Image 1 (cartoon, rainbow, N blue to C red):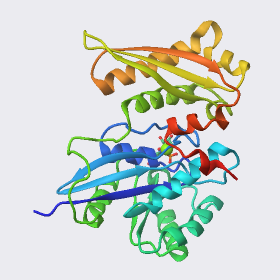
Image 2 (image 1 turned 60 degrees about the horizontal axis):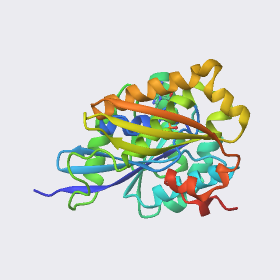
Image 3 (image 1 turned 60 degrees about the vertical axis):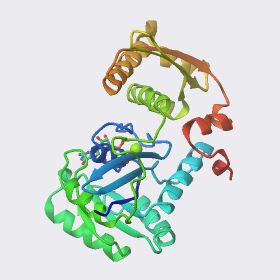
Image 4 (image 1 turned 90 degrees about the horizontal axis):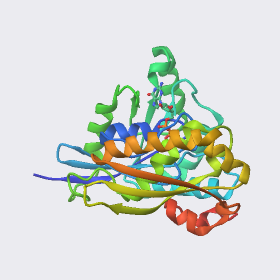
Amino acid sequence: MTTRAGFVALIGEPNAGKSTLLNRMVGAKVSIVTHKVQTTRARIRGVAMEGESQIVFVDTPGLFQPRRRLDRAMVAAAWSGAADADVVVLLVEAHRGVSEGVERILEGLVNIGKGRKVALAINKIDRVEAPVLLGLTKALNERFDFFETFMISAERGHGVDALRQWLATEVPEGPWLYPEDQIADLPMRMIAAEMTREKLTLRLHQELPYQLTVETENWEERDDGSARIDQLIYVVRDGHKGIVLGNKGETIKGVSKAAREELEEFLGRKVHLFLQVKVRPNWLEESERYSEMGLDFKDGNT
Ligand SMILES: Nc1nc2c(ncn2[C@@H]2O[C@H](COP(=O)(O)OP(=O)(O)O)[C@@H](O)[C@H]2O)c(=O)[nH]1
Ligand SMILES: [Mg+2]
């Protein structure tokens, strides 16, 4: 029996549905998802098995025109995720079509795509009528020589099996890269921090979610089988701290409860979650914060 294993990078504009697709492929929520752009900050790997093939999906931050240091580091992580992969899947939103952002990614793909299979996945097909899909498939394939085109709904699961089956035949022959039962290669403390960041992102508005970060400070296994997890939320301003806490602490309480419930489900045991908010005006310029997120600080240099 020949086994196969390889890396598949999911790239696309922010909000294209990359993290949703990764979670569906893996069958568990390893990458956080919100309706806001730039939710994913680091490269997150999720492992899926298909027959004798092990497909390691690499979720990447969205590709967009970066402005801040964090943006630049995120975009660099996304492109290098693609450059390291055996197969690249570009996700394009069916209802948005060939946007300016997609045009720019196609230009970037010309370099990355050499000697590498690049497939197109038109996502969110649940949002458009069939004729739109045909036009879009044609338009995109005229601009780039895609190996295959798939039409999917990452959220509803349409077309996802066909994509996974195709990928299983495209990853190179070789031994599996991870134990069969492993679904992600992100440290648990980072997954836990991401869960809290997701809940914050869902509850806070405008720029605030982009100007905060969450780190797991302490993780203690207790004798009764539960875990005590302490996390720090870094914000850049005093005013932000007040907003994160909310009136009478309502906001942080809601965040803490939602994050704890999700963690308990993920871990299958009881969790005591303690959140603390700290004002740290310069965290976006601190290299340690980047390494905590799995990003390269230097990539943010101009
Ligand atoms: N209608 C629809 N929405 C989707 C689909 N896939 C993802 N989404 C939504 O698109 C938003 C962005 O998804 P996410 O996976 O975070 O995108 P990412 O930024 O590319 O990782 C979320 O609100 C998802 O629920 C889909 O197939 N159909
Ligand atoms: Mg994402």
